[in-house]
Structures are given as C-alpha cells and as structure tokens.
Length: 323
Image (tube, rainbow, N blue to C red; front, side):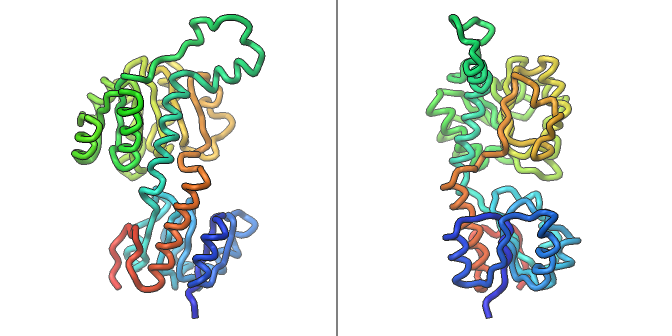
C-alpha cells in the first residue's frame, strides 16, 4: 500500500504526477476556513505533508500520529517547530539553493527601483504629469560604485553580491555568523561588524533567516546608525525588522528610502503607513515568484517527500531523527 501524503499548496501537475507514482495524494490548492477541517481529518493517517506557510507545531502534530516527514516548499522554515518534529522522529525539509538566483534578481530590482524611484516616476508619467524637462526634485541616486552592505552572506546574499560587484561595480561589505571566504575571494567582500556595516553602507540589504536571534534585529538603534542617505532593502522575513522603527526612520528622514518584499503582516494591512510613503517600494513577497523557480522548488520538495517515504535520506534534511 502506497504511503498517504497531503499536498496543501497549488503545484504543477507534473509535480503531482511525480508524487502520485509513489504515493496516494490528498490535494488542496490552499488551506482556508472552508477546507481546514477536512485537512485535519486527512492528517490523522497521513505519512507526509508538503506545502509552505502552515504553522506546524505541537498542537498540529498531536493530530498527526502517523506523520513521518514535513516538506516545506520554501527555503524559510520559521513555520516549523523543528524541535518538536525531531522529538517525534519526524523529518523536516526545505528547498534551499534552487531559488537563490531568482531572489537575488528581485533584490537587485528593489535596489534599482528604490534608488531611481522607478515606481513613483512610472505613476507620475502615467498620471499625465510629464509635461516638461524633469525637475531636480524627481532625481534619484546612483547605484553603481556605491557600498552595498549585506547582512547574511549565505547563498542568496552571495548571489546578490555577484550581481552588485560585477554588474554595478559596487563595493561589497557583509556581516554574517561566520566568515565567508568564498565571497571574499570572488567578490572582494569585506567582513564588518554589524555596527560598522550600518554606518558605512549606502545600501543595507537584510538577507537573514527568521530565528529567535534575528527577530527585530534591525530596529531603532540600527536605523540611527545608518547614513541619512542610506536605502534599506528587506527580502528576508518581515519580523527580522522592527517595522515601527522602520516607519519612524523613513518619516523622520533618518534613512532615505526602503525597498521591501516582506512585512510583519502578510498580506500587509491597508492602514500600514508604509503604503502611503513615496520613498518606499512595496512588493507582495515575490522573491522567488517565477514559474520556473516555483516549479523547481515544488519538485525539490516532492523529491524530499518521495525519497524519505521510500526509506532514504531526503536531499535537504533539516533535522537529525533516530530511525
């Protein structure tokens, strides 16, 4: 009898067909109040689940006594209680690396569009205001040959550094949990303390995962250390930033602008002051949102699922479980 798995995220039919060759699938294109009770009912005898964003904690695991693996179709896994999974002997996986290049493209897009005020000027042109030569008040700032400070020089951070260094001649400085020798050799990156990085950077790019240690790691104190001409970019997780402190720094001119793909609340609430700021570019968490990359992420998650339920170690295992 094939193992039973739940896929709770919309994925390509090719991914479902791959899983279906080896497993019995219960498929939800997404979870909501209308189908969540059915999901919980199916969870009782499920061997594996695959998706992203669902909070998987002790309470949920109590309702999944047969569960053997949880597969996140994302690089982030702050929705998983990895300790609880490990204690129950349940494998946890994510999908690193396959999205590095696409997210780095998004980050560079945020840097360029924020520095050159592209969304703002696009709206200005389409609103019929371009009737003479552009006044200086609409000018942006240069990106090329500026200092880019990257907090979190992992795979995505390195992909951003590559684009910035070779494409725009930017000086790369970084802060990380450990020295990244490869980035230093490949991109001339220089390690700085976080305080010195904030003070020196023209662009501060936050690329850390969300953990108890990184929650609100950028707040009032950190914004105060930045240049008043600095542009802050966040494509990590919204909760890595004290959003109220960011809003204050933007409103008071403590920093120049921000390019954001993530927020504390997602979707962002309509009364959030960030939505009314002309010096903020707001994207709807699209970092990895291309068809090609999302397909690759889903296929890696599916591979983790199938391989694990066949009794082998999945390619991107997050925890060590005793079998």
